[in-house]
Image 1 (cartoon, rainbow over the protein chains, first blue to last red):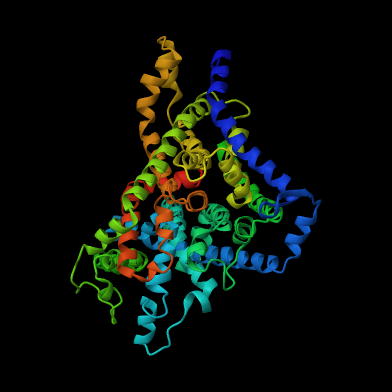
Image 2 (image 1 turned 90 degrees about the vertical axis):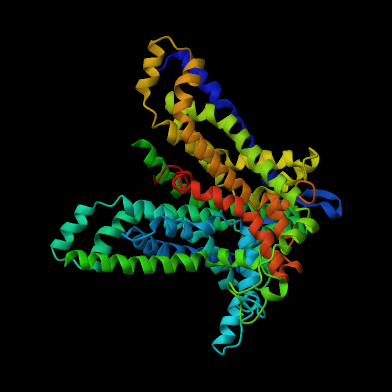
Length: 288
Length: 276
């Protein structure tokens, strides 16, 4: 039984973390919301007065808004599908008995530790460069015309780079889940004559559903704020301007703080919709 | 007969898994190999795999030209500083939540997690402005604080899941024997918590090392870490494949090695204990 003294000691020990995070959340958030209702242009004299909901309306009605939403959805959606499907297959493969399992695991996980600016630049130059990239060599070898990946197929290229970075994450978490699968249940199903496909869809997949949900939610939160990969490859050109990148451009490149802040509020709302679902799952897990 | 089948299956599994593993790892391997080529060999057609004249020249050039050591030092200071600072704040918090839970503990933990969901771009300008006002723009101290704050929820969560696995009976026994709160923490809890704290440190160091939104937007010259150093190769230096490869190898090698040690903790840390 915790005593009163230990309770107040506990509160004191928690205080620094709570106060710091509260400040980190409330101060910038309040400022963003405040700016979003002002006409704020640092290059033209700073705060030019109240703007009501003008920034919110202008951000949505600008010609760049809907394309950016579309780009964001395609990017996040494609990466999720690729990483979850291949992550599941890879996890099942890695779970099989084999020689050198530890080494293969290390090879598969490695991309996750590569910093985003490095992976984007290595892919952009050494693989996707239309003259000297490895893909260009490969295309020429088969007699095809090399592709200018980052201008002609810019979004699929970025999807590929980002998928490469996140596949290890999905694989690792799904592998952990696969390993907790009850082997006896699978054996029983096999004895009863269930085919491999049936075993996958009726036993393995349901068992993985929770892990898949978690992978999807966590990745969505990180993928919504993809930045460096676009910054060093296309700089938002060729239809790769996501919502995050659009806001970045409004704020730092065109220095329209009011407009950018309104965009920021939209991004925060969007992220929170995803976050609510994630928190529910994590919260449930805390109870047992 | 049965053994024959399983060992053949094992062989197929091994071949398939190694093939997939090597394809996934290939970009890293290719970068590593290219870093030892001359610029001409790096763009040779057809590409050279191992049959080239190995040279360390690129490493020398990159270090000399771009002052690599300073970027490296900044990365170490920012990742290390924010991890240590984060632990100082998080260990007491996680300790109290794990051992003296109250009705609100769960809400506080979930609320902390929710601060991690705040998209960085949504608060970019306020932070930028505050940094200018406080003179923190392009300073290591500023980045250490930001890195500490964005990773604090993960540190608290990871520590909490580790601490919760420490049996409470031991603490109660120590209390019965008259141990004070201080000695309880120092002599009973700390030795048992060290493995958890170590893995938390490792994961956070990696996350801070690779963070590339704030480091790109809040630094220019003095405090720029390796993420920004590599971004400066965006153009036109990026077309010098061998030098780009050498710079990239130097930026990712330390963390790749640390990462291999932390694979197991990675799952727990990144799923907030939801998958163990």
